[in-house]
View 1: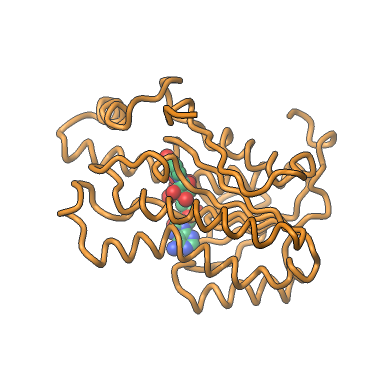
View 2: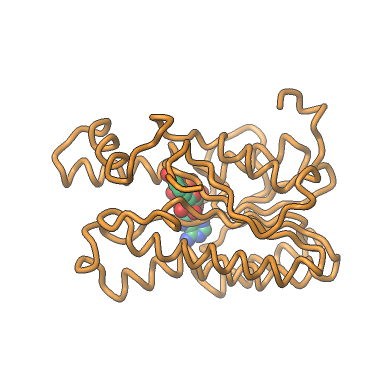
Length: 263
Ligand SMILES: NC(=O)c1ccc[n+]([C@@H]2O[C@H](COP(=O)([O-])OP(=O)(O)OC[C@H]3O[C@@H](n4cnc5c(N)ncnc54)[C@H](OP(=O)(O)O)[C@@H]3O)[C@@H](O)[C@H]2O)c1
């Protein structure tokens, strides 16, 4: 998609991107803005940079009270949303398999990757239902389909739960005019992935490149031989929220360079 003028198919739409200040979330915010959407981003820290940053609402979306305040601010200021991208998530628990994970690690991973999205959807859905339209995206991971026990056991379980929740929600909301979709990236070049590579490199006594190659090999390899760039994930999200995807709901789309080895 080249020209911003030619593809303003999200003009008039209001979109909230959680974690829209870095990595995949920032790329989604940029892509949807290019397509003409009014984009609002939320994260725990306001970014310092940029010429014309999108409206920012500070919230830690693992905290129920802050989610309630975020939803209230969105409803009062913008009257609701057309597009909600639940992008926040990531690996917070240590690697090493089942014996390395405490109850607290499991609870934190489930809050971050599953319950935060469920809570935010619940807070924002009433206005979408009232307007009889909307699109919700859940950013999951290939780990939800293809867990790697050493690196991401609790994360993978949380994302698998998100996949099932997203499917069930799509069935409930399809008759109400709301589409719900899941996007599952593979390894993507973001601050989160860089931290994970550094963590493994330190544990294994390797350089960053070698550490990433080992991690990718442990996950079964990446046929394309490289990570995704965030813009490549954002291109898929843009398509899914656009009018061109009007008959799509309930599916989980991989953007993984061929990583998941099954059809
Ligand atoms: N990168 C990958 O390889 C990869 C692969 C598969 C799936 N994914 C998924 O893609 C999504 C985005 O990942 P990413 O790699 O882009 O992550 P990232 O680089 O860590 O960026 C995370 C974003 O979320 C915000 N954030 C973090 N915790 C938050 C909280 N509690 N409340 C509100 N905002 C919060 C961060 O800003 P603040 O720190 O200021 O809050 C930042 O804007 C996640 O769901 C992840 O599981 C990523």
